[in-house]
Amino acid sequence: MTYVVTDACIKCKYMDCVEVCPVDCFYEGENMLVINPSECIDCGVCEPECPAEAILPDTENGLEKWLELNNTFSAQWPNVTRKNDQTPDDADDHKGEEDKYDKFFSPEPGQGD
Image (cartoon, rainbow, N blue to C red; front, side, top):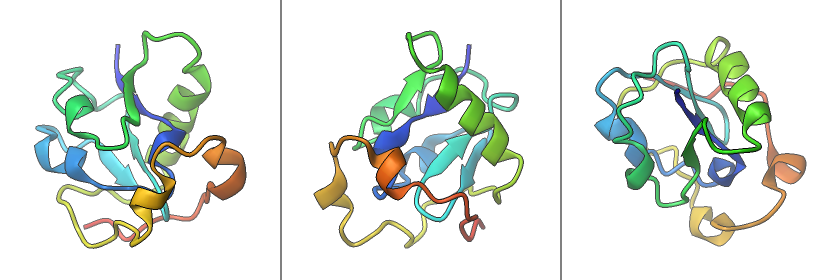
């Protein structure tokens, strides 16, 4: 098992999860984060820290797409190990919004550390 970041993170990117991760397995895209499933130790401390409720265990149904996306982009985006000022100013406006992947996903990397 591993944890995955879903589209609920897109345009929110609060980064509270990054602060508590003991193995630094988060990677930063332009408008979302992903978890490297090979590095995740399944501790689960990140899940309750996410204000957008974007982090879920991969054992939940229907997360295959998100596991693949996390795996793909964690290999392309820079590692991020601490919360930075990259949370969008309008993050709260997008919290809970539907279909964010189709509307807003960007494959571009973020800044990382």
